[in-house]
Length: 258
Image (cartoon, rainbow, N blue to C red; front, side, top):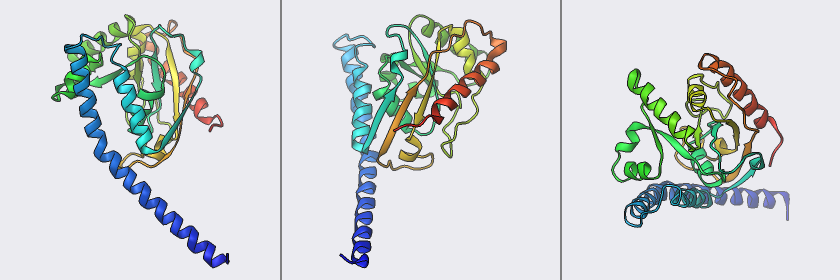
């Protein structure tokens, strides 16, 4: 084969690959709301009719995450889960590269946890009820007394044995780089009094960067660090805790992977 023929063949392959990737992305975009609705309805049926507990129906969101990852052509690898003690509560503090982080953690973190979610989501028909029945924890993001009350309630739920995931950066990264951890997110950890686990998610920015609608196939890695005891921290030291966790997540991100 001549160099020109090889170049043309490669161009055709790349073009075909882009078309397939585009069509896959459209398929996922269409199917995710349908799958979400089906899982929400199944959650309500399992809890209300068959009297399953919130813990027993967690296989539904986990299955949903795996289905979405499979449809998207995303492979996920996890390291460090041996550092965790099953059966005890943790607060997982993860970097936030992409909306796809939610599916990845939901499916592959390998630990029973619940999401903290803004109060408004619980008002969505079917979806909000399913979140409530699944044990997700509402947080009022408004300022003032209501916000403090919801934070105290969330801290009590965690102290009583419910693990949660938080994104201390507060929003998704625009360029995939680690942002500053907000000290306010540390108040919940200090109030709950449970260990905080640094978690680094690598690869989701390439799969679905902020501002894009269509996913792309790729490799994702979840790197779990050693739990951090917060017994030595007070609310006044929330900034110190935020800086410590940010540094540990940065170290996890810097490790060679894949």
